[in-house]
Amino acid sequence: MSANGLMRFASPKLSRLFGAGRAVVLKYHRVLAAPDPMRPGETTAGEFDAQMRAVAGAFRSETFGDFMRGRSAPSYKDNTVVVTFDDGYRDNYDVALPILKKHGIRATIFVASEYLDGGAMWNDRLLEAMSASVGRTVDLEEAGLGKVRVASLEDASRLAQKTLSSIKRWPQEQRAGFVAGVAKSCAHTGGERIMLNAREAVALADAGMEIGAHTVTHPILSTLSPDESWAEISESKTALERVLGREVTTFAYPNGRPNKDFTEADVERVKRAGYIGAVTTHWACATPNADPFQVPRQGIWGSNRAKLWLQLLRNFRR
Image (tube, rainbow, N blue to C red; front, side, top):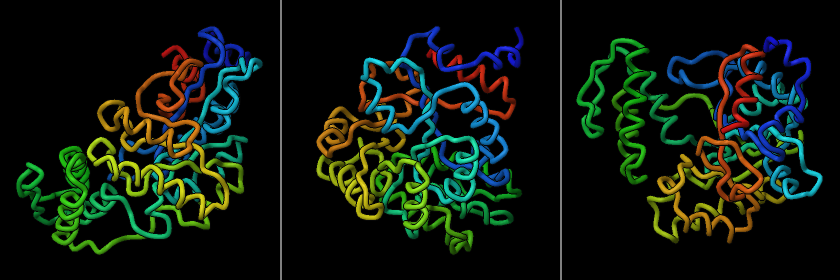
């Protein structure tokens, strides 16, 4: 039977071929209104619309918090697709929300609380600065890439990705200073707001989306002291609850690789802070016996509905 033929019979029950009560937790960051050469891996609105159509047409879907609260119920047998976003970008509201509402999907947005109502994360500052570097010579020696003449936007994108990888685990102050130097050399003084503001975060929650915590400033937790880690984990919850006027119960580890970007001590802090579950970036299906504080996530790509449905079905096997 063709993929299109299989889709006519698709239901949450079909994915039980691989065991009941599983979840494919999908991880997104941004949904772009149009492709951006500086962000070649980000999902576009057209792709996201096709992906959500595939999810809504064949699978049970709910927020991460609702999945965590319900997965231990004796009657909980249907497999689930959970849609999540990291960081808290403005386009989660402007672009993704209308598509989610169109398909009747409630997603979870994990927000780094520091960047509500202004500011941007270091990686976005670097990308924005490098987008203004065409025709300039940029000093990237501290990152091990030398002084480079940037000839095109494609050059800028390639260099930006190399730089991001090189400085990701630097101490926060060193990294911020380096990015500020790159921005100055490119004469970049800042662009339009790219992160959610408080009003948009509240509107997302009012629309049925879940807001989860993603630390305060998005550090790699394993590089912090115990006190610093605790502050990032607990204070993000407090700050978001103050903005939303409702409880924040779920958490996403920045970068998210178990035993690399966060430690078992960080997991214990997440539990102590009062969250009911947390997601990683480990690539696997979430089984009923998965650690609720180290739930894996996956991705899907493209816009062909039949292929997307088969990707999702295959992801239940991981």
